[in-house]
Length: 275
Image 1 (cartoon, one colour):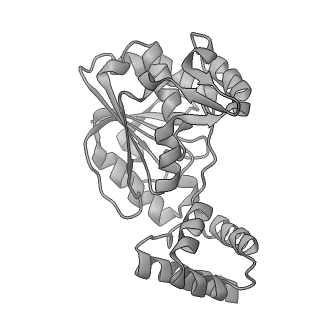
Image 2 (image 1 turned 180 degrees about the vertical axis):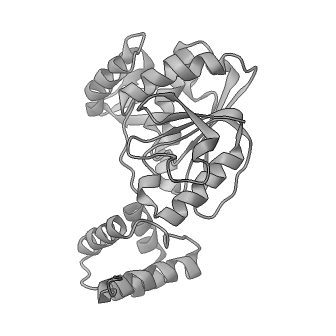
């Protein structure tokens, strides 16, 4: 039995439709429950009591929209997040990548870039980074600016060091950055093969053919329809025998391409396209 939409449901739908029609940003197929929660949090921060009031402000205040975009996109990330994934990538994917003369990697939904720098460190330690180009994309220009800077809070480095070691790091993690009073500034050599650019998984198409696509902890915020659409985009963007890496809570099961991949690291959401 289908539940009738509440007034809040209808207001949120109208808000998303207005944002899409007026500004071109499409959140209409994001998972409804988490999106509504983020809209409520944003309204509280803005001192607004109804979604309709939020819509009125958004349509007449571009700065408010920019704040909303930050509020609707989830930017939780860290270096070497889920370290077992990086261990599996090092052990299972790197030997395959060594066979390629040049390696194109797409890190989709990169947020503020911590996982992109993690991959750059891993590839540098494995001696193949000079043959790689990592295209790191996100829909939000503000988080991309942080990613481009390669500057992250110094107080996170102790946590990142532990994750790096659990991920099979081969050096002292402090070798990769210099510190000032509040920041860790990562080595410029890590940026040499990184390209940061805006790309919207909801509305934009493929822009290259890749040997690796990483999109971790992004699809969980999309509804089933949008997940299927993005999986199709990834399949079309991966070369034959290319590698797909997803987040812990994500899967290729129940997608049209479930049988087009083989799992290369059990439980780590690391797949290889069959053909």
